[in-house]
Image (cartoon, rainbow, N blue to C red; front, top):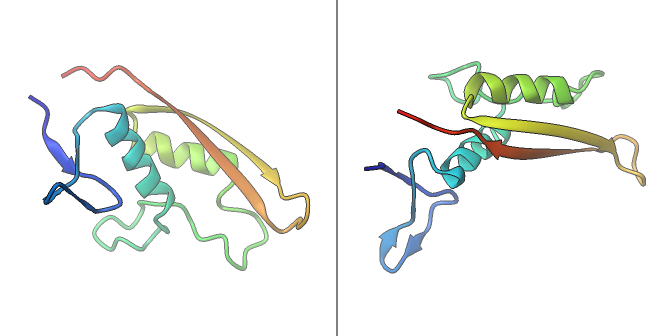
Length: 107
């Protein structure tokens, strides 16, 4: 039997907190999203978790190799592909797209 985890964003459905089942594609994708939305150092109990803040840096810490490395480190259940492109209207804006393929999870 799989364990329920709180769904993100946190919400109520039919009077109860929404959940996702552990080790399902939805739960794994949710874990990757949390990783990508967290700035390194933001979670003091796990200081290496997240993506480095690229603000005021010359080299993007959100580059494809860095994002892939963090996903492999913190969410090994997900196979991911990362692509990025520079915004056509503003060369200082970089769009990163993460595509997930969930690996078989066996316990």
